Amino acid sequence: MQYTTDVRIIRLMCTGRVDPTMLADAFLEGADGVMVVGCHFGDCHYITGNYQAKIKVGLATRALDYAGLNPQRVAFNQCSSAEGERFVSMVTAFDRSTKELGPLGTADRLPLPQLKEKIAIAKTALGKEKLRWVVGKFTEFTTTGNKYGEKFTDHEMWRTLDTIIMDELATYEILSEMQKGPVAVKKLAETLKLPPPHVLKYVLALQRRGIVNLAGIEGNSPLYQVAGKPAQQAAHAA
Image 1 (cartoon, rainbow, N blue to C red):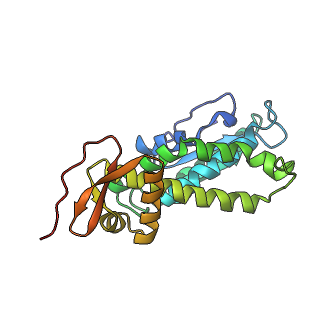
Image 2: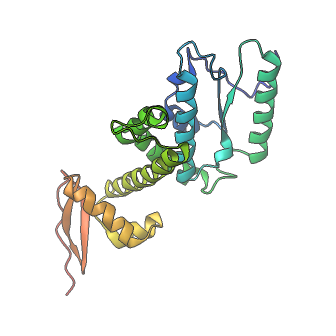
């Protein structure tokens, strides 16, 4: 088999071992595109590994898309060990389409420095329990149903995951900004380009969980910080 030398192959025992954070790591390390290639459905030695891989890649694609990455930089394909020509064809086509997009940061919604910051935040969210739990239950909920016997369509599950992705990334974006120091909701909304009421909802939820606390008042605006950091003296307007 011969394919472009621009491609780096990383072998795993099963694509089910692919973690969504691995895709984020690849882009943080400078990759311009990532394609996960697994065996055909029904041929997995681990029964459901390729099904899990497709869901995980879909999750990573959505989270990275929300972070600003062009979703065409991520692909999931299937190929058996006996389909060498098919593998070369897939790799060649993906390499060509990735080169057409250009280097990371050129065909994406953000320039490279900001894009990598957002990808790092997406990686944090992808590694947390909430998204992992839903992904782990995806196949069960769409086939046998939950403990109440309720079955969900793929569309319903992805719609749920999309909502969680949006909430999780917004939450970790807010925390990332608060790591820089106390900040008002209005300033957070301007920085993150989110509606102020949405930001306030996330901040108050974090405050109820004890993750952030009130650092002081600046003018008429409360300042919030990550809990555990020393509170700065409030600046009051005259």
